[in-house]
Image (cartoon, rainbow, N blue to C red; front, side, top):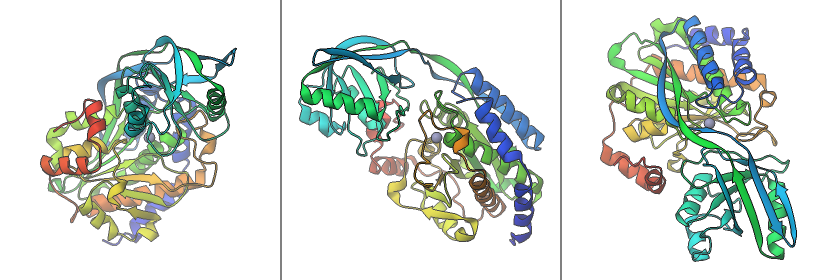
Length: 444
Ligand SMILES: [Zn+2]
């Protein structure tokens, strides 16, 4: 197909409309962090439903699901060291249970299973913290839980008193601590034993959250569907602009620009704006479960998560060789995208993953790193002012033109679900089995 005329139409409309920025501004300024199960999330869902209906999409609906919800309370870490007692500012991590406990604090080094093995049981009953050298929050939390720690401290390396956030899904109390108080804690420990009282009044309870779905049907029903997804929920301490308001606005803009072209699309486009991602991919798991019978007709999943810090858009295929081959044949430089098909780029902590488990091939669309000082995700500084409207537009152009090509010429895209034995092998090779078992989501 000759895309020049369609691209001119899309790009002209994109560059002369304020819709994209207006959508992002509403999501951030009227809906705050859109934390799953709250009135902010519901307001965002209603807004997104209204926009998608106005753009002429079909079967626009909110799909409710229940999940492990969470309500923030007070958090206090009172430390006693070398004869002094003082508070260190902290925040509970979403998903943490409440607690009131008093015990010692221990440096658990890297915080992975090997680090706890070296500690030979001394972490039992202690509040543990870790260095920041590449072990993921989820892995550190799991290792601390399995070592019998009393509480888990997650800290960031970025100066500026920014408390890092990120969810946990089990019964071990957990807090975030900014870089500066953590370094003070380390100075205290260097001088002798440290005790602390940790009081969290947060609560875990079931909530109802909503995925927002909408479709642009394809001209050829036998060509199946492309899922264009991304989460619209975010963390409660910020506006969740980079993660993931920007991608939400980009997907709604793509829906606006592509709806008038429906006669040119062979495959359908199914937009799915997930909720509950930040508390543990609840929306995407719920969608993949509720729509399991239809997933065999899905040709590819594009998951947009953390966009618009820099260009080009990185297309990180998720152990999906056939989709990578299809993408490699595109004029990627002209589309302002780069392909990363490294098998090690397969990640389990974003919304494509439940579809990967079901056997689909998927690609994670993610921003290039921006200039220094532009990465604010999972902190209170993830706010609208950090988004450059030009980069947001460029990102929307790339994602929209990519979705056009996926839906217009789906020949060559994978068809059908990969067998469970192959998926199990991919997931095992990627090292995801312990985490999936820990969260009770091992499906094999
Ligand atoms: Zn995200």
